[in-house]
Image (tube, rainbow, N blue to C red; front, side):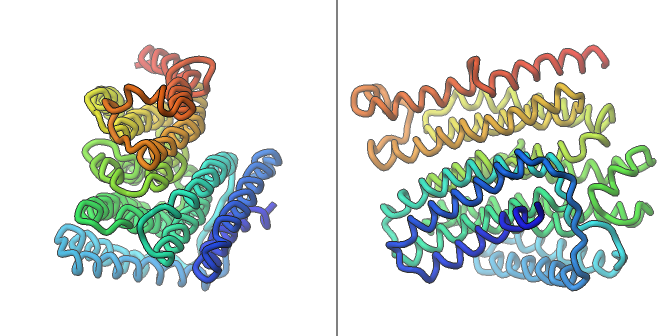
Length: 445
Protein backbone atom coordinates (compact mmCIF):
# COMPACT_ATOMS: atom_id res chain seq x y z
CA UNK A 1 0.00 0.00 0.00
CA UNK A 2 2.66 2.52 1.06
CA UNK A 3 4.85 1.96 -2.05
CA UNK A 4 1.83 2.71 -4.27
CA UNK A 5 1.15 5.90 -2.32
CA UNK A 6 4.79 6.95 -2.62
CA UNK A 7 4.60 6.36 -6.38
CA UNK A 8 1.96 9.10 -6.60
CA UNK A 9 4.56 11.55 -5.28
CA UNK A 10 7.56 10.24 -7.20
CA UNK A 11 6.17 9.42 -10.67
CA UNK A 12 5.10 13.01 -11.47
CA UNK A 13 8.43 14.40 -10.19
CA UNK A 14 10.51 11.87 -12.16
CA UNK A 15 8.37 12.42 -15.27
CA UNK A 16 8.81 16.19 -15.00
CA UNK A 17 12.60 15.82 -14.68
CA UNK A 18 12.77 13.41 -17.62
CA UNK A 19 10.75 15.80 -19.76
CA UNK A 20 13.43 18.45 -19.30
CA UNK A 21 16.24 16.22 -20.61
CA UNK A 22 14.62 13.90 -23.16
CA UNK A 23 14.04 14.88 -26.80
CA UNK A 24 10.73 16.63 -27.44
CA UNK A 25 9.59 13.80 -29.73
CA UNK A 26 9.49 11.46 -26.73
CA UNK A 27 7.55 13.85 -24.52
CA UNK A 28 4.05 12.88 -25.64
CA UNK A 29 4.72 9.18 -25.06
CA UNK A 30 6.18 9.93 -21.62
CA UNK A 31 3.19 12.09 -20.66
CA UNK A 32 0.69 9.41 -21.71
CA UNK A 33 2.61 6.65 -19.92
CA UNK A 34 2.93 8.69 -16.72
CA UNK A 35 -0.74 9.69 -16.79
CA UNK A 36 -1.77 6.03 -17.09
CA UNK A 37 0.52 5.04 -14.20
CA UNK A 38 -0.73 7.63 -11.71
CA UNK A 39 -4.36 7.06 -12.73
CA UNK A 40 -4.00 3.29 -12.29
CA UNK A 41 -2.28 3.74 -8.92
CA UNK A 42 -5.06 5.99 -7.60
CA UNK A 43 -7.79 3.63 -8.82
CA UNK A 44 -5.98 0.71 -7.14
CA UNK A 45 -5.79 2.61 -3.84
CA UNK A 46 -9.48 3.52 -4.06
CA UNK A 47 -10.49 -0.09 -4.69
CA UNK A 48 -8.25 -1.48 -1.94
CA UNK A 49 -9.30 1.11 0.67
CA UNK A 50 -6.59 -0.25 2.96
CA UNK A 51 -6.53 2.78 5.26
CA UNK A 52 -5.60 4.51 7.48
CA UNK A 53 -1.88 4.64 6.78
CA UNK A 54 0.19 6.88 9.05
CA UNK A 55 3.77 7.88 8.30
CA UNK A 56 6.24 9.28 10.81
CA UNK A 57 9.13 10.59 8.71
CA UNK A 58 12.74 10.88 9.96
CA UNK A 59 13.65 14.00 11.94
CA UNK A 60 15.88 15.42 9.22
CA UNK A 61 12.84 15.69 6.91
CA UNK A 62 11.37 18.20 9.38
CA UNK A 63 14.47 20.34 8.88
CA UNK A 64 14.23 19.98 5.10
CA UNK A 65 10.57 21.10 5.20
CA UNK A 66 11.43 24.05 7.45
CA UNK A 67 14.25 25.06 5.10
CA UNK A 68 11.98 24.70 2.07
CA UNK A 69 9.37 26.91 3.75
CA UNK A 70 11.95 29.64 4.35
CA UNK A 71 13.45 29.42 0.84
CA UNK A 72 9.99 29.56 -0.71
CA UNK A 73 9.12 32.74 1.19
CA UNK A 74 12.45 34.29 0.22
CA UNK A 75 11.67 33.42 -3.40
CA UNK A 76 8.24 35.06 -3.06
CA UNK A 77 10.02 38.14 -1.70
CA UNK A 78 12.38 38.14 -4.69
CA UNK A 79 9.38 37.94 -7.05
CA UNK A 80 7.81 40.87 -5.20
CA UNK A 81 11.02 42.91 -5.57
CA UNK A 82 11.43 42.02 -9.25
CA UNK A 83 7.79 42.73 -10.11
CA UNK A 84 7.53 45.73 -7.74
CA UNK A 85 4.62 44.36 -5.72
CA UNK A 86 4.44 45.93 -2.26
CA UNK A 87 1.60 43.72 -1.00
CA UNK A 88 3.43 40.53 -2.03
CA UNK A 89 6.59 41.76 -0.31
CA UNK A 90 4.73 42.61 2.92
CA UNK A 91 2.93 39.25 3.00
CA UNK A 92 6.20 37.40 2.36
CA UNK A 93 8.02 39.27 5.14
CA UNK A 94 5.19 38.80 7.65
CA UNK A 95 4.98 35.08 6.88
CA UNK A 96 8.76 34.75 7.15
CA UNK A 97 8.71 36.42 10.57
CA UNK A 98 5.83 34.29 11.88
CA UNK A 99 7.35 31.09 10.48
CA UNK A 100 10.76 31.81 12.03
CA UNK A 101 9.10 32.30 15.42
CA UNK A 102 7.02 29.13 15.10
CA UNK A 103 10.04 27.02 14.16
CA UNK A 104 11.64 28.00 17.46
CA UNK A 105 8.48 27.25 19.46
CA UNK A 106 7.44 23.99 17.82
CA UNK A 107 8.34 20.88 19.81
CA UNK A 108 10.75 18.43 18.18
CA UNK A 109 8.91 15.29 19.27
CA UNK A 110 5.47 15.33 17.70
CA UNK A 111 2.93 13.19 15.85
CA UNK A 112 2.40 11.79 12.39
CA UNK A 113 3.45 14.10 9.56
CA UNK A 114 1.50 12.19 6.89
CA UNK A 115 -1.83 10.45 7.39
CA UNK A 116 -3.71 8.76 4.55
CA UNK A 117 -7.40 8.05 5.14
CA UNK A 118 -10.41 7.53 2.88
CA UNK A 119 -10.70 11.25 2.19
CA UNK A 120 -7.07 11.26 0.99
CA UNK A 121 -7.70 8.20 -1.21
CA UNK A 122 -10.81 9.84 -2.64
CA UNK A 123 -8.79 12.96 -3.48
CA UNK A 124 -6.04 10.80 -5.04
CA UNK A 125 -8.66 9.43 -7.41
CA UNK A 126 -9.88 12.87 -8.42
CA UNK A 127 -6.44 14.46 -8.70
CA UNK A 128 -4.70 11.76 -10.70
CA UNK A 129 -7.43 10.50 -13.02
CA UNK A 130 -8.71 13.93 -14.06
CA UNK A 131 -5.24 15.49 -14.11
CA UNK A 132 -3.98 12.53 -16.14
CA UNK A 133 -6.55 13.32 -18.83
CA UNK A 134 -5.59 17.00 -18.72
CA UNK A 135 -1.89 16.12 -19.04
CA UNK A 136 -2.49 14.05 -22.17
CA UNK A 137 -4.47 16.94 -23.63
CA UNK A 138 -1.75 19.42 -22.56
CA UNK A 139 0.91 17.45 -24.45
CA UNK A 140 -0.95 18.09 -27.70
CA UNK A 141 -2.09 21.61 -26.80
CA UNK A 142 1.32 22.97 -25.84
CA UNK A 143 2.86 21.54 -29.02
CA UNK A 144 0.89 24.18 -30.95
CA UNK A 145 1.83 27.01 -28.58
CA UNK A 146 4.11 29.66 -30.22
CA UNK A 147 7.10 29.20 -27.91
CA UNK A 148 10.42 27.36 -27.76
CA UNK A 149 10.71 23.63 -27.10
CA UNK A 150 12.44 24.48 -23.81
CA UNK A 151 9.40 26.49 -22.70
CA UNK A 152 7.05 23.67 -23.71
CA UNK A 153 9.03 21.19 -21.62
CA UNK A 154 9.05 23.64 -18.72
CA UNK A 155 5.26 23.98 -18.93
CA UNK A 156 4.63 20.23 -18.75
CA UNK A 157 7.24 19.78 -16.01
CA UNK A 158 5.51 22.38 -13.81
CA UNK A 159 2.17 20.62 -14.35
CA UNK A 160 3.71 17.33 -13.23
CA UNK A 161 5.22 19.00 -10.18
CA UNK A 162 1.85 20.54 -9.36
CA UNK A 163 0.20 17.10 -9.35
CA UNK A 164 2.89 15.65 -7.08
CA UNK A 165 2.45 18.48 -4.58
CA UNK A 166 -1.33 18.05 -4.60
CA UNK A 167 -0.93 14.35 -3.80
CA UNK A 168 1.30 15.29 -0.87
CA UNK A 169 -1.06 18.01 0.33
CA UNK A 170 -4.10 15.73 0.71
CA UNK A 171 -2.22 13.35 3.01
CA UNK A 172 -0.40 15.98 5.10
CA UNK A 173 -1.32 15.79 8.78
CA UNK A 174 1.33 18.15 10.16
CA UNK A 175 0.17 21.72 9.50
CA UNK A 176 3.72 22.88 8.83
CA UNK A 177 3.97 20.31 6.03
CA UNK A 178 0.49 21.28 4.87
CA UNK A 179 1.58 24.93 4.78
CA UNK A 180 4.56 24.07 2.55
CA UNK A 181 2.43 22.12 0.08
CA UNK A 182 -0.26 24.80 0.16
CA UNK A 183 2.29 27.47 -0.79
CA UNK A 184 3.94 25.23 -3.39
CA UNK A 185 0.59 25.01 -5.19
CA UNK A 186 0.53 28.81 -5.00
CA UNK A 187 3.98 28.93 -6.63
CA UNK A 188 3.00 26.45 -9.34
CA UNK A 189 -0.18 28.38 -10.17
CA UNK A 190 1.84 31.61 -10.35
CA UNK A 191 4.30 30.05 -12.81
CA UNK A 192 1.57 28.49 -14.95
CA UNK A 193 -0.65 31.59 -15.11
CA UNK A 194 2.43 33.68 -16.01
CA UNK A 195 3.54 31.23 -18.72
CA UNK A 196 2.73 33.42 -21.73
CA UNK A 197 4.64 36.34 -20.15
CA UNK A 198 2.53 39.15 -21.56
CA UNK A 199 1.34 42.04 -19.38
CA UNK A 200 -2.03 40.52 -18.39
CA UNK A 201 -0.44 37.15 -17.62
CA UNK A 202 2.14 38.72 -15.30
CA UNK A 203 -0.42 40.93 -13.57
CA UNK A 204 -2.92 38.11 -13.02
CA UNK A 205 -0.20 35.70 -11.86
CA UNK A 206 0.90 38.27 -9.27
CA UNK A 207 -2.71 38.64 -8.08
CA UNK A 208 -2.93 34.85 -7.67
CA UNK A 209 0.34 34.89 -5.74
CA UNK A 210 -0.53 37.52 -3.13
CA UNK A 211 -4.13 36.42 -2.67
CA UNK A 212 -3.11 32.83 -2.00
CA UNK A 213 -0.41 34.08 0.36
CA UNK A 214 -3.25 35.43 2.52
CA UNK A 215 -4.33 31.81 2.89
CA UNK A 216 -0.79 30.79 3.79
CA UNK A 217 -0.66 33.48 6.48
CA UNK A 218 -3.97 32.19 7.89
CA UNK A 219 -2.45 28.70 8.22
CA UNK A 220 0.58 30.08 10.08
CA UNK A 221 -1.75 32.03 12.40
CA UNK A 222 -3.69 28.80 13.08
CA UNK A 223 -0.45 26.98 13.98
CA UNK A 224 0.46 29.86 16.30
CA UNK A 225 -2.88 29.63 18.15
CA UNK A 226 -2.68 25.84 18.44
CA UNK A 227 0.78 25.99 20.03
CA UNK A 228 0.10 28.93 22.34
CA UNK A 229 -3.31 27.73 23.49
CA UNK A 230 -1.69 24.55 24.73
CA UNK A 231 -3.13 22.09 22.22
CA UNK A 232 0.34 20.71 21.53
CA UNK A 233 1.23 19.27 18.17
CA UNK A 234 -0.23 21.29 15.26
CA UNK A 235 -1.74 18.54 13.15
CA UNK A 236 -5.18 17.79 11.73
CA UNK A 237 -5.58 14.56 13.72
CA UNK A 238 -4.54 16.26 16.95
CA UNK A 239 -6.88 19.17 16.20
CA UNK A 240 -9.84 16.81 15.75
CA UNK A 241 -8.96 15.08 19.01
CA UNK A 242 -9.48 18.42 20.82
CA UNK A 243 -12.81 19.11 19.09
CA UNK A 244 -14.57 19.92 22.36
CA UNK A 245 -11.79 22.03 23.86
CA UNK A 246 -12.51 25.73 24.54
CA UNK A 247 -10.89 28.05 22.04
CA UNK A 248 -10.30 25.34 19.39
CA UNK A 249 -12.63 27.10 16.95
CA UNK A 250 -10.21 30.04 16.55
CA UNK A 251 -7.49 28.07 14.69
CA UNK A 252 -10.20 26.10 12.88
CA UNK A 253 -11.74 29.38 11.65
CA UNK A 254 -8.34 30.51 10.37
CA UNK A 255 -7.93 27.26 8.43
CA UNK A 256 -11.39 27.91 6.97
CA UNK A 257 -10.15 31.32 5.80
CA UNK A 258 -7.29 29.55 3.99
CA UNK A 259 -9.89 27.29 2.35
CA UNK A 260 -12.00 30.26 1.22
CA UNK A 261 -8.94 31.87 -0.37
CA UNK A 262 -7.91 28.71 -2.23
CA UNK A 263 -11.50 28.17 -3.30
CA UNK A 264 -11.61 31.69 -4.79
CA UNK A 265 -14.62 32.67 -2.71
CA UNK A 266 -15.47 36.36 -2.79
CA UNK A 267 -13.60 38.66 -2.27
CA UNK A 268 -10.71 36.38 -3.36
CA UNK A 269 -12.31 35.33 -6.65
CA UNK A 270 -10.16 37.61 -8.83
CA UNK A 271 -7.17 35.26 -8.78
CA UNK A 272 -9.22 32.46 -10.35
CA UNK A 273 -10.88 34.72 -12.90
CA UNK A 274 -7.44 36.05 -13.83
CA UNK A 275 -6.17 32.51 -14.43
CA UNK A 276 -8.15 32.54 -17.70
CA UNK A 277 -5.21 34.22 -19.47
CA UNK A 278 -3.13 31.05 -19.06
CA UNK A 279 -3.11 28.20 -21.59
CA UNK A 280 -6.33 26.18 -21.39
CA UNK A 281 -4.78 23.11 -19.66
CA UNK A 282 -3.87 25.43 -16.76
CA UNK A 283 -7.48 26.60 -16.46
CA UNK A 284 -8.64 22.98 -16.49
CA UNK A 285 -6.07 21.95 -13.89
CA UNK A 286 -6.78 24.88 -11.55
CA UNK A 287 -10.57 24.76 -11.87
CA UNK A 288 -11.37 21.05 -11.94
CA UNK A 289 -9.22 18.55 -10.13
CA UNK A 290 -6.49 20.29 -8.19
CA UNK A 291 -6.05 23.84 -6.93
CA UNK A 292 -9.59 24.85 -6.06
CA UNK A 293 -10.50 21.45 -4.59
CA UNK A 294 -8.16 22.22 -1.68
CA UNK A 295 -11.03 24.37 -0.35
CA UNK A 296 -13.69 21.68 0.17
CA UNK A 297 -10.92 19.25 1.18
CA UNK A 298 -9.91 21.45 4.14
CA UNK A 299 -13.52 21.88 5.28
CA UNK A 300 -14.23 18.15 4.92
CA UNK A 301 -11.11 17.42 6.96
CA UNK A 302 -12.32 19.79 9.69
CA UNK A 303 -15.99 18.81 9.45
CA UNK A 304 -16.13 16.90 12.80
CA UNK A 305 -15.00 20.07 14.60
CA UNK A 306 -17.17 22.42 12.56
CA UNK A 307 -20.42 20.44 12.88
CA UNK A 308 -23.11 22.51 14.66
CA UNK A 309 -20.58 25.22 15.59
CA UNK A 310 -20.88 29.02 15.19
CA UNK A 311 -18.08 28.87 12.59
CA UNK A 312 -20.15 26.42 10.53
CA UNK A 313 -23.15 28.78 10.70
CA UNK A 314 -21.11 31.76 9.48
CA UNK A 315 -19.37 29.68 6.80
CA UNK A 316 -22.67 28.26 5.54
CA UNK A 317 -24.32 31.69 5.37
CA UNK A 318 -21.33 33.24 3.58
CA UNK A 319 -20.91 30.47 1.01
CA UNK A 320 -24.67 30.42 0.48
CA UNK A 321 -24.44 34.05 -0.59
CA UNK A 322 -21.43 33.35 -2.85
CA UNK A 323 -23.24 30.37 -4.40
CA UNK A 324 -26.10 32.61 -5.56
CA UNK A 325 -24.01 35.70 -6.42
CA UNK A 326 -21.46 33.78 -8.52
CA UNK A 327 -24.20 31.88 -10.36
CA UNK A 328 -25.89 35.18 -11.27
CA UNK A 329 -22.52 36.60 -12.35
CA UNK A 330 -22.00 33.61 -14.65
CA UNK A 331 -25.23 34.45 -16.47
CA UNK A 332 -23.93 37.96 -17.20
CA UNK A 333 -20.73 36.74 -18.93
CA UNK A 334 -20.05 36.29 -22.64
CA UNK A 335 -16.47 34.99 -22.48
CA UNK A 336 -16.79 31.19 -22.38
CA UNK A 337 -13.98 30.64 -19.86
CA UNK A 338 -15.33 33.32 -17.52
CA UNK A 339 -18.74 31.62 -17.58
CA UNK A 340 -17.03 28.40 -16.51
CA UNK A 341 -14.97 30.24 -13.89
CA UNK A 342 -17.96 31.86 -12.19
CA UNK A 343 -19.79 28.54 -12.33
CA UNK A 344 -16.80 26.93 -10.57
CA UNK A 345 -16.81 29.57 -7.82
CA UNK A 346 -20.54 29.02 -7.31
CA UNK A 347 -20.29 25.24 -7.07
CA UNK A 348 -17.24 25.45 -4.81
CA UNK A 349 -19.33 27.54 -2.44
CA UNK A 350 -21.95 24.79 -2.40
CA UNK A 351 -19.30 22.11 -1.72
CA UNK A 352 -17.88 24.14 1.16
CA UNK A 353 -21.35 24.81 2.55
CA UNK A 354 -22.22 21.10 2.59
CA UNK A 355 -18.91 20.19 4.21
CA UNK A 356 -19.48 22.86 6.89
CA UNK A 357 -23.00 21.61 7.67
CA UNK A 358 -21.36 18.26 8.37
CA UNK A 359 -24.32 15.88 8.43
CA UNK A 360 -23.86 12.51 6.76
CA UNK A 361 -26.02 13.51 3.79
CA UNK A 362 -24.30 16.89 3.45
CA UNK A 363 -20.81 15.35 3.47
CA UNK A 364 -21.87 12.81 0.86
CA UNK A 365 -23.31 15.65 -1.26
CA UNK A 366 -20.04 17.57 -0.98
CA UNK A 367 -17.97 14.53 -2.03
CA UNK A 368 -20.25 13.81 -5.00
CA UNK A 369 -20.03 17.43 -6.13
CA UNK A 370 -16.24 17.45 -5.74
CA UNK A 371 -15.86 14.37 -7.94
CA UNK A 372 -18.40 15.04 -10.67
CA UNK A 373 -17.67 18.75 -10.87
CA UNK A 374 -14.02 17.83 -11.52
CA UNK A 375 -15.01 15.50 -14.36
CA UNK A 376 -17.53 17.88 -15.95
CA UNK A 377 -15.43 21.02 -15.68
CA UNK A 378 -12.31 19.36 -17.07
CA UNK A 379 -14.39 18.28 -20.08
CA UNK A 380 -15.72 21.80 -20.59
CA UNK A 381 -12.37 23.56 -20.18
CA UNK A 382 -10.60 21.18 -22.55
CA UNK A 383 -13.26 21.90 -25.13
CA UNK A 384 -12.82 25.62 -24.48
CA UNK A 385 -9.24 25.10 -25.66
CA UNK A 386 -10.48 23.34 -28.78
CA UNK A 387 -12.85 26.25 -29.45
CA UNK A 388 -9.91 28.68 -29.26
CA UNK A 389 -7.38 26.67 -31.22
CA UNK A 390 -9.56 25.09 -33.91
CA UNK A 391 -12.61 27.33 -34.26
CA UNK A 392 -11.08 30.61 -32.99
CA UNK A 393 -14.02 31.23 -30.66
CA UNK A 394 -13.77 32.69 -27.16
CA UNK A 395 -17.27 34.06 -26.58
CA UNK A 396 -20.63 32.37 -26.24
CA UNK A 397 -22.13 34.89 -28.69
CA UNK A 398 -19.82 33.53 -31.41
CA UNK A 399 -21.10 29.96 -31.10
CA UNK A 400 -24.38 30.30 -32.97
CA UNK A 401 -23.19 28.10 -35.84
CA UNK A 402 -20.95 25.76 -33.84
CA UNK A 403 -23.44 22.94 -34.40
CA UNK A 404 -22.74 23.21 -38.15
CA UNK A 405 -18.98 23.86 -38.11
CA UNK A 406 -18.09 21.60 -35.19
CA UNK A 407 -20.97 19.23 -34.42
CA UNK A 408 -18.95 16.86 -32.24
CA UNK A 409 -17.45 19.68 -30.16
CA UNK A 410 -20.91 21.22 -29.80
CA UNK A 411 -22.28 17.85 -28.66
CA UNK A 412 -19.54 17.35 -26.04
CA UNK A 413 -20.02 20.88 -24.64
CA UNK A 414 -23.77 20.26 -24.40
CA UNK A 415 -23.16 17.00 -22.53
CA UNK A 416 -20.71 18.84 -20.24
CA UNK A 417 -23.32 21.44 -19.25
CA UNK A 418 -26.06 18.83 -18.96
CA UNK A 419 -23.84 16.82 -16.59
CA UNK A 420 -23.81 19.80 -14.23
CA UNK A 421 -27.55 20.44 -14.38
CA UNK A 422 -29.67 17.39 -15.18
CA UNK A 423 -30.33 13.83 -14.01
CA UNK A 424 -28.99 11.15 -14.04
CA UNK A 425 -25.59 12.83 -13.79
CA UNK A 426 -23.69 12.91 -10.49
CA UNK A 427 -23.64 16.70 -10.10
CA UNK A 428 -27.45 16.79 -10.17
CA UNK A 429 -27.58 14.09 -7.48
CA UNK A 430 -25.13 16.12 -5.38
CA UNK A 431 -27.28 19.23 -5.71
CA UNK A 432 -30.43 17.29 -4.85
CA UNK A 433 -28.78 15.93 -1.71
CA UNK A 434 -27.63 19.48 -0.90
CA UNK A 435 -31.22 20.72 -0.98
CA UNK A 436 -32.22 17.91 1.37
CA UNK A 437 -29.32 18.78 3.72
CA UNK A 438 -30.24 22.46 3.73
CA UNK A 439 -33.82 21.60 4.66
CA UNK A 440 -32.62 19.53 7.61
CA UNK A 441 -30.09 22.19 8.61
CA UNK A 442 -32.73 24.94 8.51
CA UNK A 443 -35.08 22.79 10.55
CA UNK A 444 -32.44 22.37 13.26
CA UNK A 445 -31.76 26.07 13.19
